[in-house]
Image (cartoon, rainbow, N blue to C red; front, side, top):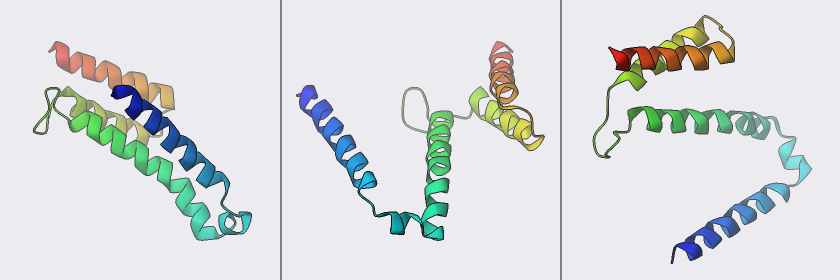
Length: 101
């Protein structure tokens, strides 16, 4: 049963990619479409980060633990315009330090 779901998801991804490739260039040249296409990956990444930070490990309610504090620390580093690797490793170290305490 699970293989049908995997094959169906693979076919759906292929068809979605094919639909994106079949959009006429005139539509893609429109400024609004271009701006939305630039912002959609950022919104999806922000949604994934939010779900991973706030989701409880056993499911159910929201979890407020070291991950939330590490995310706030990462936002602070980004606000200070720190390099990406400094943000990633700094927030990971901050979360590890909080969990150690």
